[in-house]
Image 1 (cartoon, rainbow, N blue to C red):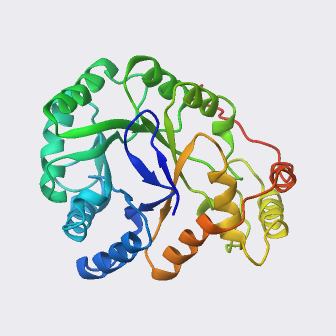
Image 2: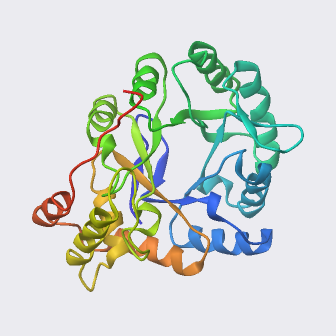
Length: 298
């Protein structure tokens, strides 16, 4: 396993991160899979208070007991479940963030959270209050660092300018190169790490039938998937080629992969040791479909 410092933080995170949202087994099953990941060198585990009404944090917390000093736990805040359980509402307020961390700490069975992330964000938010909440939690020692999970360029720019974020979680793949337009250069310049999700585009780049995706036609999606296959080799299958495309971006600290089975875990881990994409292979992939751009939140 390879490790990278996450932006300007002291957190050394595995090149493959474990996206815990995909966990669907019992606590015992989840723990078994998480322990296998730890044994294979994965040390970054990402969850959120939103997932399964907090039960995802509970399961992850149980699984990581006894491993706490060797892992980096990331969770998210900002989506408040309604009392009747019918859904959730966006709440980036200071009071809510400060109270929510207590519940996450309890569910995760830990005294501190390594990376606390705002789970979204808009320019209409009380951003100064939101940042003040994270800074307060830093001072209290309840979190080590904070970041945001956002694909919105205007929100990312605001937090880069006004806060001490160390990371941005965002979607990125051959079929979603929107971050290349402005976000990647800004984050690299400010030493803020990217946690990339969606590296295989919901499986469309690997094993799912072509379908329209983010403005691409089904035909264009099929062309991208074919390019992935063409640039794959026996030592690097399609999924690993798609992951290497993401990991070879200098600003990407970790590709956070949704994992729910042993085979998915093994596939993701093999991407780390798979041969790197050459400049010509990268160029061929980039030429497969036109680059897409953000149409909103610019």
